[in-house]
Length: 142
Image 1 (cartoon, rainbow, N blue to C red):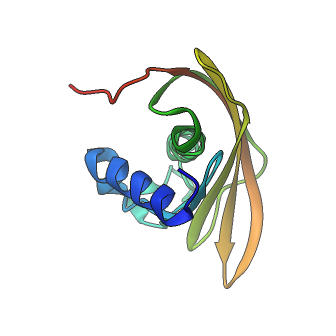
Image 2 (cartoon, one colour):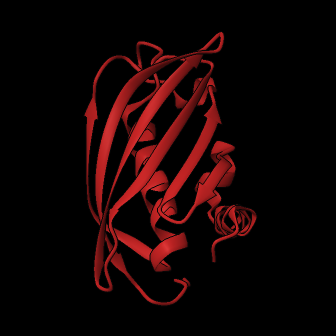
């Protein structure tokens, strides 16, 4: 699959199957083989005690972006390990995660992502993450 529209369509289909993503209002902004860009708009439900984006949501966005970057190149994946580095308080009207597949593989693959907080059109890097994913070879069902 090399057509970016097909990549976005694939990710939109996967996104629609994930209740968490639907609840969060996660949007697929762009996709290509080994790359994905996703976003959410700020909601108070995403905040922690001081009003910043909760680290759990930061991790979810980075993990999802990494998985989405992988799926259009290697097929369905499940994260086996991921790490998050919170660089500054995550504040913004909107948050965008951009991920790249670093090393595709038949058994496992590696991806990295960056999360940006956007306020009045200005982006600030708020977190980075890396994921190791297992290639499942077939869609996962409950």
